[in-house]
Image (cartoon, rainbow, N blue to C red; front, side, top):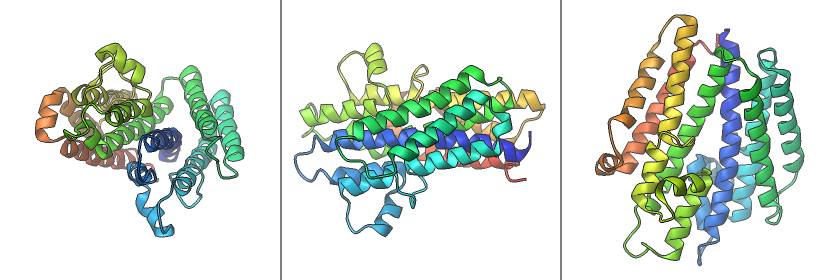
Length: 313
């Protein structure tokens, strides 16, 4: 496969995942802000930090408000990680690699872009926000569904999956890192209604509440939530699940091409961090420090994949 095609597939699916994750963060910020009795707008700075867009926001805004933060994350053209920007970039990459996609995948991608371009053409008011977020999740899920149902399991599929799960792992690590003080609360907030709502909100942000209850029951605890989102092998948005998929799809590429690269070593090394430790060992090391290590490794891995498969040649 040409490096340009691999690059287009990798980034198309990263941007699709980014758009959905950003919409989930907006939904999370809205839910958490409703639990705050004072300064509800303060939560939005934390939400933008999670998305990695706070610095750019601060350069163009004098203060953080809910309305401005939501608009920045959903539709600001100046924000390359806004939902509208991400979907536009995904479609542009899809056009570059259109011959590698099935008709169904292209139609789903193009339909996603057209629908979201229309609904995000104007500022979203609070009343319409839930419906808009649902639409974003539905349209991005349709692209993934047609991908799963119609693409051959070849290098095209593998680059799509690697892009998806690199973005997903990066997102869940950021959510946990910015919110780790909620998972490890002070004695003053443990067991309070606000504390419980924030735990629930973290699980909701990654569609993990139902799965968590199946595994751990209805009682939420910091240790169990962290274990579920970091180390659970069956939870499709956990860090370990995502890293495992990245490693596996890189291995499929090695089999297809008959050669291994440094990116394979980095992926295997990253995978070993999860199999070698339990959640208690991670807490002993420091959840924040562990997540920072993972984020750095994910960034290094992404850059190495681009080099190994000559994305820009």
